[in-house]
Image (tube, rainbow, N blue to C red; front, side, top):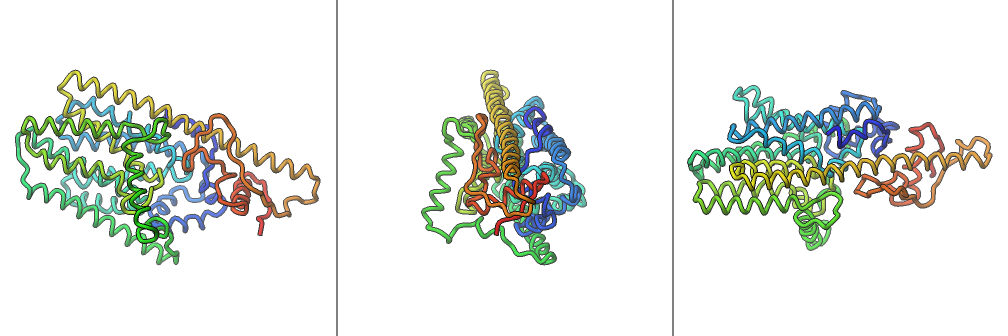
Length: 446
């Protein structure tokens, strides 16, 4: 984690939200409430009005490392000691190194809360599923509900972790030659669905209550769900295209690799082998695996459009790591297949670390370029020898894309703050907001 994201400890890269928090803290917290994130606002009170990006990046990296350790612990509890603990190396190799996290970590002043939120999701499920005390189970449920008011993506992440717990229960029964009845499986799935729906509904009620108390209008669902707002075929095509991107990414794709497809192919081989050996619970294992594989598409299906890439974290990297853990546990007795899997993990760990560090370096250089551009604009204005130039309104025409050779464009990562907005007026307002954080003050255009 520190090797991949350590560069964030030594630069003051700004995101679009960083400037809003610096210049309009209360207003931006209300914006988070309006998009259904009162839990994020509640956690933000821990560092209220604090915008030291160096310290917050340090906290984010520390808690992200803790989240990775907690995920290892959750897997260890869920597998019932039926595996070699050395297999846990897969999680820190695949989960935190994913390029997808670079998109989320672009939002500097949310990273600490995001990393802490991952920890809270895992802790809530440990309390619900692995601590027999009912008070802890209730606490876990309430904690899970709270995390869903932070980021909607935590809901999908929690679903994946619960399904993995069910998967390992089925596999443990198979190893002991125990057949799980349809009634027992339906009970497990029913409990999962009840927990997921009840926590989601309660979290939405909490979000609605926060909006009511703070007198904030909802703005989250306006552009998030497009079913019925455009031709049906467009939504279907978006789902198909995104599924294709996940399973068959193009060569050189910045954020996706063939690892997901490799996992699917290996799982097919596992299921065929189980069926050939006439193992028990194969059908239920297949259904559970299918549920895990579908979770990365959940937002696409619900919204009827391609989701933001950052919406795939922390779930998609967790899916890859957990599936590889399951495959490794199943084939661990086979010397050849085990070492083949080790090679696959090492290869894709290297690819992910390389791509993620490149993305972080790209963002660093883009931020440096933005700072130099702001200085150049200011120097040019002052060189005109205008009396009190700060009293003038500043309008910038067009935009400016990054020109450094290391720039890699993502949805937000590597995008200059001088090109973030769709037209000159918005670009000017955005740029002026950015410049004000450095004390370079000019009046907004009207």
